[in-house]
Figure 1 (cartoon, rainbow over the protein chains, first blue to last red):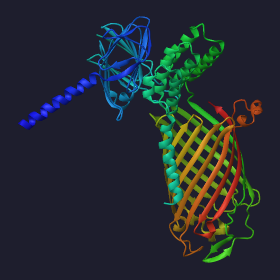
Figure 2 (cartoon, chains in turn orange, green; figure 1 turned 60 degrees about the vertical axis):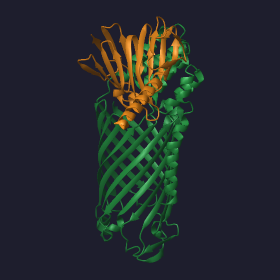
Figure 3 (spheres, rainbow over the protein chains, first blue to last red; figure 1 turned 90 degrees about the vertical axis):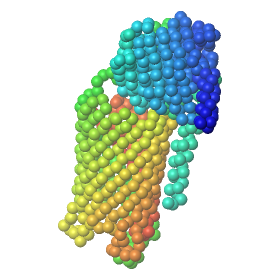
Figure 4 (cartoon, one colour; figure 1 turned 120 degrees about the horizontal axis):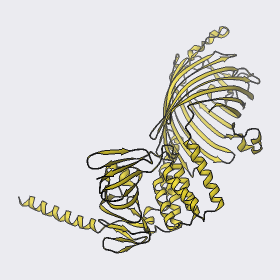
Length: 191
Length: 439
């Protein structure tokens, strides 16, 4: 029994120290910051500011920002927007990881990075009315209120000359799921 | 495995596994540390584009466009990427924004109008049927058309003899032909086409290569994600002036897997069966002894860099079965080629090594020596549209539908049998005029 206790104790210490490490770890930067951008501590952010695990980014009126995460996911955040990176795990060697982001309000355009490329299920974007899964593409989310969000698939078209495959979005309202595979098509998610 | 094969394989590894990473000089870590540095980020964007990582190029250019909103060059670069990506929604939005901007110059507006025209052209539905006729002329000069051996000797029933004194070395051959293709686009990713052609081949001094060649093929092309697949069947028949007529039919497929814009893997396989018709005046030679079935398989790797350079490598394997085993062989080969796009055409250097090991000795030639041929083929060629080479011809060919090809080929065959050790050098000129009948 003492051996089991020792193992449990050691594991607890390890998990605790790992979670502390993750909480303090940089997960990306504000790669472009125009205007008034703040984090949850009301610290003003500008181009080059570091983003940490669990940060909430608030972009005020007449402002916009691009956030570049370590896996090269790029989030372009429009004015009057708020989003949180709730989960970010990434191993640069294996390029495996997971991103969970929460868009509370506003307009956010996302160009997916290595995590989604390796495993599309590992990029999850939550909106007040549901959630979005993305398979190797670019898309924009416009959250007008807690009641309504619009999701538009962007990214390469079928006639692209670069050998790129158009992406797929899985948009869910919690009960039903809709797939969008044609760039320019959109889905409106109501509560 | 001989030393030259090892050298080629080593070269391929160095080319594709060393060259590619070396193209990326700016790292993502540098971008995280300097996200607003115009020079570093532009360099990163172009490097990532070269490596086929277009999403990284796109996000970098969008960032620069946010940080440097009056820089027209960044906008135009971004538009060019969106155009290639067929990202219509973003492209239209960006163009509208630029057109509404009073700072946009007339030159930029002209460029935008060209882009809009391209979008309009792309949005038109593809024609379902297409048909064209190619009329061609080819002239080739040979320095050793009869294959005069290196030693001037050959084996004949185990006796070393002199090569025929009346053998022709320098000669010219001419080919005049027409080829008709008709096809249908089944949908945006697949098409089927039928081709029939007739070539009349003549020789200046000799008559060995004089024949009429009739051929036909059916091919189907399909894009499946990143795969471009072409299965086909074909048939050809020669009507020879001095030797047995040859009938060949076959089936095969080629597939190209596009890893990204710069890297692709090609592979294919084919089967063909050939039979010779007996000819009345020369039945003693039993031409149908050379009747054969040929199986081939190949795999290759293609790497494009800077948009104008292509390095290709291919490893092939041929298994030839024949009615008489002294005509049958197995033959692995390695091919390397480099192509560069030039203003006046595509310049290609190509080198192939093939080793054919025959399955049985030919008693009529030598009953003790096993035949093995090492064939080294070097090719250098320039091909393209004639208006690229001679611009003033545009008045005669405004659509650029006359194609040319200049080629120099050197074949060095080293065989265990004297009869098959020879050096051949050919120089050819080919011109094709295409008449689009329906498109």
